[in-house]
Length: 262
Image (tube, rainbow, N blue to C red):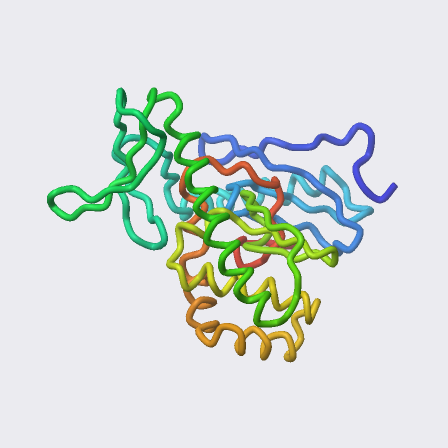
């Protein structure tokens, strides 16, 4: 009863300077004021209302901040689709995508005569984005499984399942049932960042919190923790530039969003 009214739209259109911005509307029981957030990972604009807030007032608030919406969206890094000639980082090293139509195989890496790293993709051009995405997911799972099992052995804990997804909410998660989930985009980051996230999530098997004890445990598992955290703070959002995002619509972490409130 605290959330959307039967006639309340899921999204509204906000005009500004000749452009129309689609803004998703949601109510939240803990909200105390109207807020606008730009989710950097999904490029989604979210307008949050308190339980008893007025949609009319909320829309007026969003219209008032039309310039803010336009400016924040304009500051986001340009999207980089998976296509012939695109340069993307693989384990932090730039690779240029090269389409090899007519060549047998799927996706592989090689180095050309000039020493440039290439990500070669066979098959029809229409299948290139999916093939690159599938390749990156496989590589991410392989690296994350190896790192997670290594840290689990150090702590004497058992991992039941490891999954990779395209999630905006967090880089990794751990369930009480022994399952780990990670963003496949970690394969785009330097290996020490992926290793840190694996250590972070495995540590949750012992400390299911973010207490000082938890952070001491992570640092014991991975002494380079601070270096990896700093890299993510600076470059993490850029990892969502590549390919097509297919994760949850709502990103909850404040570090990957901008906010305006009333």
